[in-house]
Image (cartoon, rainbow, N blue to C red; front, side, top):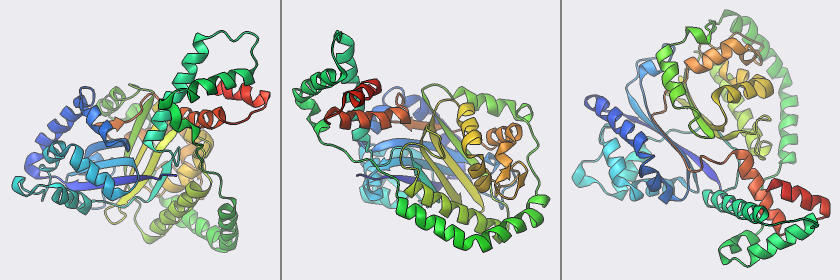
Length: 420
């Protein structure tokens, strides 16, 4: 199974090029609809990408210290990081040159080649603190192939009359059709999908039980000495910057998928820092061992998500690619994993009032939604390799592929046909 990985670049922008960089990003955004999209597609391994300029005033709250303007690039890709960066600077070097010559220290024109470009980009990489993949183990190629297979089977079913045919007979007919098409020969190879790592989960639970004498006092200390003194978000959405909200909403619901970019200031002190790192470790463990079947905390709409601590852990960036609307996405989080959201984000400045680390916070829906919108920033360029596919589609298409070639019972064959 191939692995999907994240890349985040945080590159300082030349002060004399900020306006020019904004113009380039706007042109790239338009270009995604008129050709640039095809250049991204040529990489063959890139699921999602985004660019935006991060400024000090991008943060709703006062930053821990003055910040320079920086160009942020993030991507979700198949395979190794070195190969990915090599692909970026090889397939469309002129685009990266135009962007990054607006950044400090980019190689001069006469010094630019694949190696110097790679070296420059790698220099500004920042580590990902936690990373979630909605369809782990599925390469971009596999996702697109299985989408093609599903459409192929759907067309056959729609064009024929199946009166009097059993589900097993229909499955057999479909299999014969696919078997006769050499372009679909790849589908005969069964693919493995990740399963829950129960030994890993049991080990985690045992460790949590052992650590309870530390965890419980820690949560009590947080409540009595930190949470009760916090300044909390009391704003509602009607009090937010109307212009920013309109600009954010203008980029939403253009496709079946949306994106979310959030920048936050961390609460000061070692207690908060230790808390957020412990929770990120907990999140990474759950993601690796348990959330491997297309749902994060019961939410079946998230393709990729990542948390990135930057500036010596003083600030945080959160990126997500998801299905459906912004409001539906966040309300799903509130309903199904409000405690998880609260545990992590209560360590950021001005989060809604929290009690005992995991209660309050996100469950205060009115203030949480206002906080979420207020800390969201514009994503100036966003690319998706498969706008039309939901995470449910992707997971379902893999099941269709595997079940097409299996010996099924009549009941199983009926379920197989429903998937199509």
